[in-house]
Image (cartoon, rainbow, N blue to C red; front, side):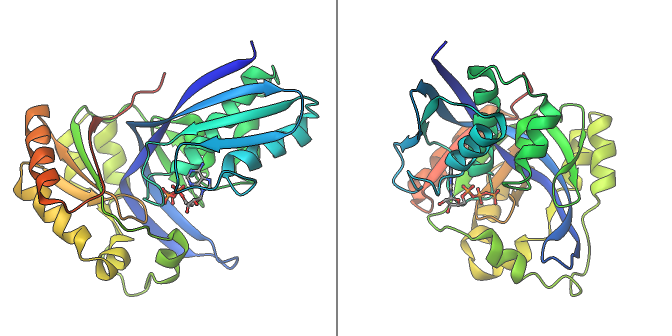
Length: 288
Ligand code: ATP
């Protein structure tokens, strides 16, 4: 086998809390992560030597600054791989959007190179290497529904969240995760999301219980800077969504629908308004 094609799926945060700021500048978080059916297609091909990255996207670097290049370099060095690898990314996941696009591409290259070069690394070993390049990478290697704590790397797998349909919209702005965390007024937060309650609701298969607890403390920062996020949430909730929320550090907004028809109708209406750059109707992506 010289070539491998993999789908790398995006995530949303059903709940996101920041517990405290750590001395090293990182933040301790408590998040409910969920893989969704929006994916990049990644093709890995064995070559004689070196690492190359190509992509159909004009929005991400096609050189050593791409996270997937860093993964290939780390694996080549750690596992002493003599051959090279060519990585091609077909990008569909919105970039700098709060959907872990870079982290999930990285996770897919960890798993794909492990297979392509028969490295024999366990999921845990891949996750340990992954966290060196990004706090969300261990989750992306695991996928599915999970509670993420610590800086995002301490994972507890959860049963699949209850089925529903999602309308996902990415406005034409890019948000820096660093900016959002730096501008979060943690002591000033009036309330924190009930993440423990959401975990219980997921365990009970209680969609209403999950929806009632959907909340994201980072929204206070991003929504203040970009009113379009609030506008999108209001649009979705006025157009059939049971609840709408910003994902991660934003600006992507997702709405939860119990019927596909309703999500499709809202997506059509939103497209006509010309408010956003990318729109998807999808579902939660189950673990393989
Ligand atoms: P998160 O939810 O983890 O904060 P995000 O969705 O906000 O992630 P990404 O799409 O991962 O953000 O992109 C963040 C930055 O990383 C981009 O500005 C981009 O230039 C850079 N980057 C490097 N490699 C990739 C990649 N493979 N895919 C996307 N972005 C990448």
